[in-house]
Structures are given as C-alpha cells and as structure tokens.
Length: 261
Image 1 (tube, helix red, strand yellow):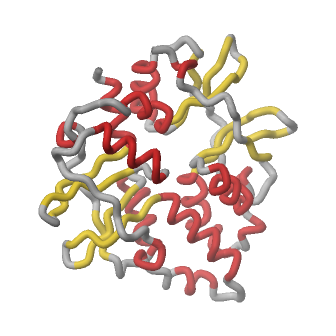
Image 2 (cartoon, rainbow, N blue to C red):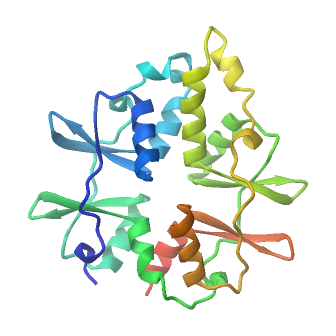
C-alpha cells in the first residue's frame, strides 16, 4: 500500500507569528496534535503539542503571558518528508527511526499531504491479533497528587506522551501531553499577578487527568483497540486484567507492528 492512499490532503496551518494559545485552540478545534507552520504563505515547519507543552512549562516562559509566547519560539523548521509513492511500511519505519508522529508527503518536492500515526493505524481496523503481542509492559506511572510540572518533566525525561495516574497502585486516570499543553495554556489565560510561577506549581495531576479511563485486556484484539482510539480520539489505552495494570498500547506500538508486517 502506498502512502498516498492513506494520507490526509487537508493541510492545517498556522502563521509563525500567532500566539501559542491560538495554536492550541486550532488543534482542539480540528482534533489534531500538530500544525504546519507558515511564514509569508509558505510552509516553513511544524509545531506539535509536545513543543507547546515544553515551551509553556519552561522556566523562562512561565513568567510571560500566553499572549507573548508565539509559535515562532517553539516550532521545528526541519520537515521530515516522503514521496507519495512510498510504501506504508517504509513510512512507519521512518516515523519510528525519527521519533515523530507525522510525515509530510511530497510529489516531486511539492507538499501534497501529511500522514500521521492515526492515518497509519486505520489499516489495522480488521486485525485480530491480541494486544499482548504489541503492548508495552514497562509503564510509567505517577500519583494523582503529584504536581503537573513534575509530570511534564517525566514526559520530557523519558520521551513519552502518556502517564498512567494511580492512587495506591490502582489506576484512576491517564495524563496525555495534550492535557498538559491545554492546562498550561488555560492557566496562563486566567492567572494574573506576579505569582504565576507559584500558582502554576500548585496545579496537580488529578486536576488535569482524564478519568474514568478506557481500558482493554491483554486478550482483546488490535481491531478493538484501533476502533476505540479512533472513536474517542485517544492515542493510548491502558491494559488491565483483574484490576491490575499489565501495560499500555499506544499508537506508536501499533505503528511498530505495521513496520514489522
């Protein structure tokens, strides 16, 4: 299968000079986690939820209003591309190699689309393989009473997009990069005064996490997992058996499965 068969031809863009709060609003409206960045009507890079979360939570930017933090300060100028006739497996391998979630598709150097992990996993909608074949067993967890900034640091340190939220080892929620970015963006919008930094440190994981959590069991199929991800616009599902956390399946795990098939 060629990438042009599954790519999205709709390119969602934002100007490089827009404040990051507008980028967050556009991501939420379009239900995407990345935007192509334009300067003078020309695509010059890409900005992701991770970029926004890192910028909004940085020591330097925490002292600024969100109106003064712009896309220009956090987007990546390096666009990873593939030609439209590339094989889907090749695209999956490239995503894993580069540690990215989207690739720009070109036709003789001209941008014609974008392919994301979401686009890739759609080809697994009829896969009957059990989740225990693809799930990660080593899962990063955080207590619900931990500070949000601590969760953000964990995500950056381990290079992950999800944390399972627990209370006494029992799963009570899930925290995604998008939750962190939205929370930091919203906080900047409503907080006032000199003590923003101090107030921000008081935001807890339980204030932001998603709960209750959609879960699956090790014997459930990839087909069922993909269906739930697409229907609920989520990128990771904890795997639980008899109320015990066994692992997690993310879109990255499914892309890895595609790269090997």
